[in-house]
Image 1 (cartoon, helix red, strand yellow):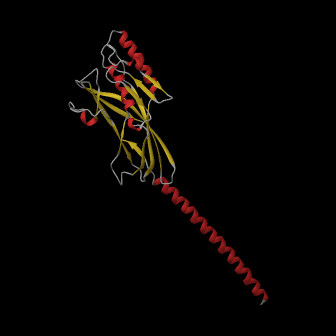
Image 2 (cartoon, one colour):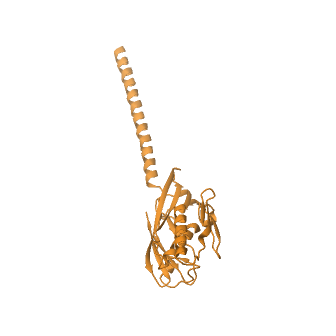
Image 3 (cartoon, helix red, strand yellow):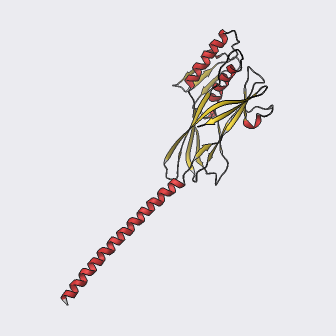
Length: 254
C-alpha cells in the first residue's frame, strides 16, 4: 500500500510538472501570437503619404513686369484670372490615420540667389534693361530671409512663416479608404519667386539660360503605434510646351 501511495504521489507530481510546462508553453505561444499580431497590425495598418503628379503653367502677357502662375487645369487656353498659386495634392494611401503631420518646403536658396545675381550682372552688361532690379537680392541663413528689391514689387520673404506656405501642420490625415479628399499644400512663395526670376532670363532670346530648377518637400508624421516616419519628396521642373504667351511645365517627383 505504501508503494502504491508513493507511486501515486510521484505520478501526481509529474502530472503537475507537465501541466505547468504545458501552461507555460501555452502562455508563451499566446504572448508570441499577440506580439506577432501587433507587429502585423502595425506593418499593415500604417499611413503612407504620396504626392500626386502635377504640372503648372506660366503666362507672360504682362512680361517683363509680371509673370503669373496657373494651375494645370488652366494652361490649355488663355487664362483670364491668374491664381499665382500652385497647390500639391497629398494623399494617404495607407490603411491607417497619420497624426501630427508636418510639411516643410526647401531648395538650395543660396545656389539660386548666386545664379540669379550672376545672370543679372551679365544681362545688364550685354545692354539689356534691368527690369527686375535684382541689385539687392540676398539670402540670410540666420534670419531665414530672402530680400528682393524691384521698382514696383519690393519683397521680404521670411521662409519659416506659415503665411508663406512653410511649416504646415495637421493634427491628423485620414486614409483614402475613409476620406478620399487630398490635403492641398501650397508651394511657398519664395520657391515660386526664385523660379520666376530664373525663368525671366530664359525668355530673352539673346541671353540663353536653362531653367533647371528643383525643390523638395519634407514630411514627418506618426503612425498608430506613435512611431515617427520621415519622407522627402524631390521635385524637378521640366518645360513641356510653349504657347504664344503660355508656358507649361511638368514636375518630376522622386
